[in-house]
Length: 47
Image (cartoon, rainbow, N blue to C red; front, top):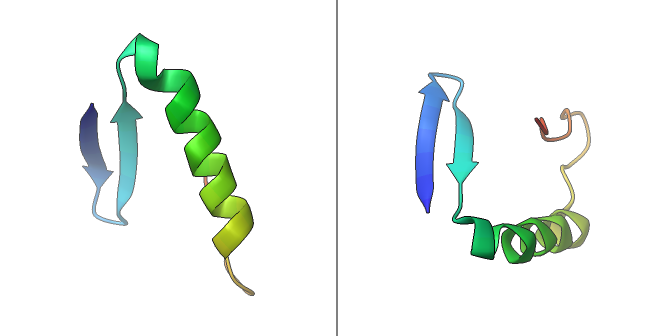
């Protein structure tokens, strides 16, 4: 897994191994549903 900070905002790019990508995506989506993004904040950027 590579986690790369793209800028000072900060924005990040995750680069998982292909065998781990599906699990990581499901885990992150589950965490987003559980914790939400909070009122007054934009949602996460998905590329």
